Length: 64
Image (cartoon, rainbow, N blue to C red; front, side, top):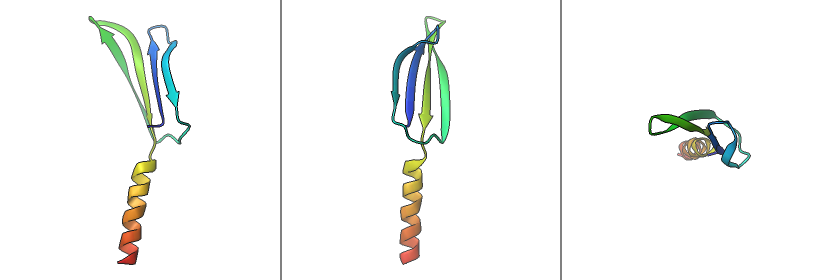
């Protein structure tokens, strides 16, 4: 995870955490309570863990 934000219905940040990592993709979803939109969750994902995994597979394949 690179960043997560929870904002209220006015768009003001309720919670925010940013690790400053490069972002591979972002997703957002509306938060509902009793059939009423009360805010939004925004999540940014980085690609670093997958890249490290693929790099280690490549290194093992190269050594083999």
